[in-house]
Each structure stands twice: as C-alpha cells, then as structure tokens.
Length: 400
Image (cartoon, rainbow, N blue to C red; front, side, top):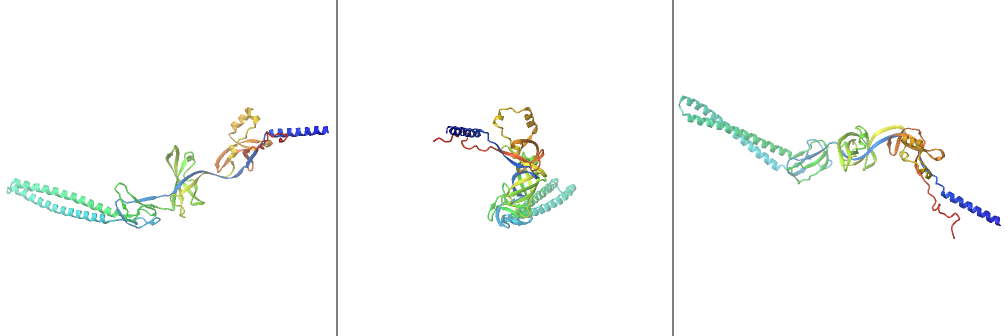
C-alpha cells in the first residue's frame, strides 16, 4: 500500500513538472506565406479630376437691354452664326434712325458750305483782278479774301461733322446688330443663364448668357498630380478612369498635356495633367468626377511578390536580444539592401537579398534575387496566443 502511495505521488509530481515547463516554453511562431508569381505588371499613378469639354465658349452681350426672345435652351445643338437670343431692339432702332438723320444733315451742311466756298473763291478771283485795275479799293479785296478763308474753314468743320455723325451712325448700327445674339461656334448649349424679360447690363463687364461646348465628342480631364509622382508622368501615356455614373465601365484616355505651373495648396505642390478622352458614345458629361490611373510602366512575364514580403522582419527571440550580432551578420544585413524571407531549416526565416523594380496593386517586381516562380515568401509572423492563465495555473489542480 505504501509503495502504491509513493508511486502515485511521484506520478503527480512528474505531471505537475511537465505542465509547468510546458507553460514556460517559448511559443512557436506561425508564418504566413505567399507564392512568388509570374505575370504582367502595370505601374500607375492615381489621381482625380473633372471631365470638361475641350473648348467651352461663354456667350455674352456687349449691349444692355431686356431679353425679348430665346431661341435655344439647355442641350440645344447650335451652328455658328445661328440666332440664339434677341434683346429688345426698339431703343437701338431709334438710335439708328436718329444718328442716320444727323449723318444726312451733316452731309447736307457739307454741300452747302462747299457751295459757299466755291462762290467765295470766284468772288476773290474777280476782286483780285479789279483791285489790280484800280476799280475797287484794297479793303474790298481783303473782305473777299477773308470771306474765302472763312468758307474754307466752314468746309473743314462740315467734313469733320460728317465723319463724326457717320461714326455715331455706324456705332448705332453695330449696337443694333449686337442686340441679336448669335452663336460664335458649332456646339451644344450646356448652360443658359437668362430668361425672357430679364434685363442684362453690359456697363462694367460682359454678362454671360450661354455656355456652349464646341464638341462634346472630345472631352478632357483636368487632374492634379502630386510632385512626388509628376516625374513618372509623360505625354502620350495611356490612362484608364471611372466615373461615379458608370462604376462598372472603365474609360480610356491619353495624357495630352503636363502644365509646368505649380499649384500650391496648404504647402502641397501639385501639377495639372490634362487627359484627352474620346466621348463618341456621349456617356461622359461636363463636370463628372473621374478617378484616373495613369499607366507609367508596363512589363510582361516578370516575377512579382507581395510588397508585404519586403516589410516583413523576423521577431528576435528573447535570448537573442542580449547577444550582439556578429560581424558577419551585420555585414550581410548591410550589403543585402532589400530582403525577403523564406522558410529555411527548422522552419526558421531565411533572408534572401533581392532587387526590385516597379510596383502595382500591392505587388513588387523582382529584378534580381535567388527566387523563382512558386517559391513562398514570408509576409507575416504570428505568435499563437497562450492559453489563459497557463503560466500561473496551479499544477496540482484547483483548490477546494
């Protein structure tokens, strides 16, 4: 009986010791891996912008008045020279008649003073001969000479009046013509800012009556690209983009212009990049917000790994923290540059130096390195959670 009790005590102590040492054991790490793949890679620069017509013309008025008629509305197609609005022409017609009358009066006055000049000239020539013959006094000749000079001055004044009234008449005709608003280009009316009966004043600046997009089959996107990415953007690069109205569609375009003028907002420097877009199906409308991706590089049949593999660094074991790295270890890390890790002997991370290229959608191109397709690289290290209270549990079991 005594031997049985001793054996039982020894077994319990051994079990308790095993549980204690197991709870103190450093938990093993679990590594998440991803395969090295081969395929195409596209590097892009992302940005947002607004769709706009390539050529947009704001149609205004150079004369003031009341809108009498409107001949077009939103979305109306117009031709160059087509009448699109009419300002009440009554005042302009009256001004034309008044200035025309003044012009005719000035012309008549010019004819009259011209006739007076001819008469004064004949009288002067006759008196010049008479004064030579001693028939008239010198004073009479001088009077005739003065009358001739006055007639010449009157003709000059009448000619100036004709020019002035002719200018006023021409201006009145021009204002009358401006009261009829015509489209300056072929296009589509995208905005109308006036209604019939509204008074427009052109005293200080030309009011905008209509906005006409010259050709909505060709659009452009004005987008801002950060200064860190602008060096990768070139004219002619292909562009894909989406708009909120058609989230399932991807539209295509091309970089047509990179503007050099910087735009600084809250110390952030961006540059305007213009993207040309074909809109023959007329789905895109001015003002739509576009989320664009500019293709800056494209490579086929390359090795690629998740970018998380480059960020992974093995967690150092507790006992290794106090040991200084050897000279050879420090040299390896310094010379390796970029490193990824694979599972080596003993299921431990083994570093592999690599040289990377372009990156896209969370993946990075491997240009150089001892990796091949279907190799697995470590992307994350997970320490399994210890059981709750494992280090403090009583090996003899709960107390009663």
